[in-house]
Image (cartoon, rainbow over all chains, first blue to last red; front, side):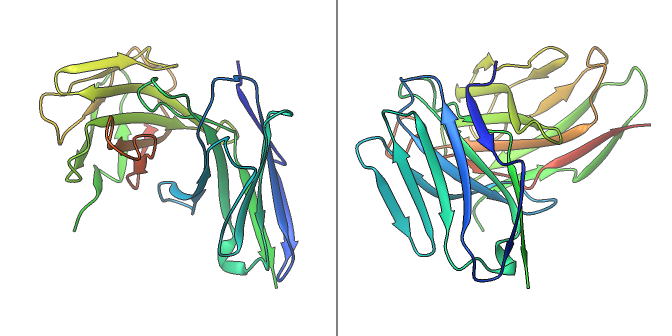
Length: 113
Length: 115
């Protein structure tokens, strides 16, 4: 039972391009949507997060777009750099559930020169 | 140097053996979590604890056990009942009921392999 579906599984983008990763959820009670970045052999680190009262949040080159009616949210990485090469996970949680996160299956991003 | 420390970084388990993975945090966080990461499957929740001396099963608790005797520590035991233990194990903590309660901070992980 996968409550958060993430695509694509892998992504190759040229340096300077835009990387886009999409996630869709089923549970309408979810009210917190973070994105995590993970480098090989390391634990995930919080990148950016959004709550459903806004449709977009931007932090530097990273932007989350949120569509509540479609139950979808996406991560956009502008001006992608080789240092952005990592695995990205979307996640979702519901208030009152002990902050439990439900994760997507991950997207491996490779930014080429 | 605040954060979450997992040890060991690599661990090998023999057939029929129980092994314990350590997780310590000095962030004064109330909640702690254990995840298992397998290629292509994301992170799956094994156990979580919101307060000392209390913990709940996650989605894949079978073959695992935990304890939470101290706020700073949340060790995970992979028992011999877990027939496919090879994976990357991640520990996380969260402030819990206070502000930013949903944010989870992760350790660097323990990679467990079967001999």
